Structure formats: C-alpha cells, structure tokens
Image 1 (cartoon, rainbow, N blue to C red):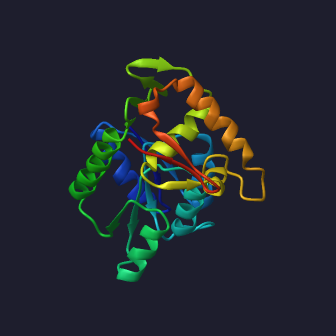
Image 2 (image 1 turned 30 degrees about the vertical axis):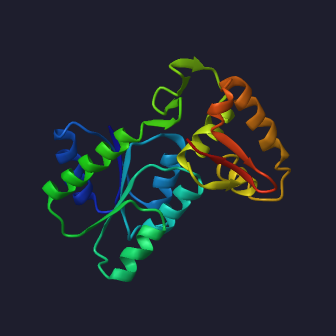
Image 3 (image 1 turned 90 degrees about the horizontal axis):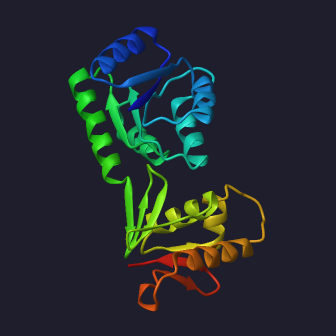
Length: 220
C-alpha cells in the first residue's frame, strides 16, 4: 500500500516515514500543498496523510481540490486544530478521518489499517448479477467477463456506487466526464445504451432504469 504524507515539518515526515515503512507501507512525501497536488495528479496513492497548515496551499484547499478531481483516495487530516467547527469543516471538504496533534503513532497505524480494511471491502461492487472488480478493472455478468471501454466502465461504476439514488444527467456529466459547463448530456444516453447492449441482461435483470427527463438509477 502506497501512502502520501503531505507535511511541511521535516521531523514529523521522517518520524512517520520510518514508522510506516517498518509496518510495510511504501511512503512518498510532499513539503507543501502545491507540491502535494502536483504529485497526486501524476501518481495514484492508497491513502493520503494531510497536514492542515501547509505553505502555498492549505491542507483544506488541497483536500477540496483532490475531491473536485473526482479522486476518492482516503484522506486523514493530521492537525493541531481541534474545534468542532474545524473538524466539521475538514470532513465537509472530503476528509475521511481526523487525528489531532500530538497523536500516538500506534493510534495512527490502527486508523490507517482500518481505512485499508474498508477500502478492500469496497474493491468489488455488485448490482444483481453484475460484479465490478475495481482493482482488476473487470466487469462480470453471471461470472462471464464483459469488455467495456474506459468511459463505459467509469459510468457503470458511478451508477453502481450510487445504487438506489437517481443520478441526474448533469451530475453524471460533472462527476464522470469532469465537465462543469453547459454540455449536451445526450451523450450519456448513447453510453448507457452501449452498456446495456454489452451487458446483455435478461428482462428481469433490468438493473439500470431510465428516470424520464432526469437521468438514471441503478437498483438490484
């Protein structure tokens, strides 16, 4: 598992790096928020340990920027800020957890392990007879592999992750296509039809339903 530490205090970075490497994790680091953002654009990580007070771009700004890129990598804030409002602000920005400084290294390791356990449980998504393996990037229907394009895979994954919720065409364009301006959402219908055709589901396996005039919903 590869962890990125974004922290400007060299002593803390060295302490965390040494301890986490002894636990078997691969560690990279960034000394400021901007450097952290640039690294995250080029490389995938399994977890980000993020300081709140950073030069060039604060941890809060970096967290928001990561989530705006539709990057769901778990983020744990490491910070001396301890008010309830600040905690809520960090969580609203997209952080998954929050550890207050000074903290016990043993506590940090346990938090990290919990996030990796949760992450592992989410590696396989299911929708009726459909199974999506997020690690191997495979889609199975009744245990038979179905070949989808990258965009089709992303769209199907998005609908399944939001199972039971109506996903509007605007939401899909913004979250899957990463387009935040006026755009012809009719392209989504083309992709949905292609996905349905490739999945070749039976009538009773109509798991992706059209909500007329709104968007789509995935349901078992």
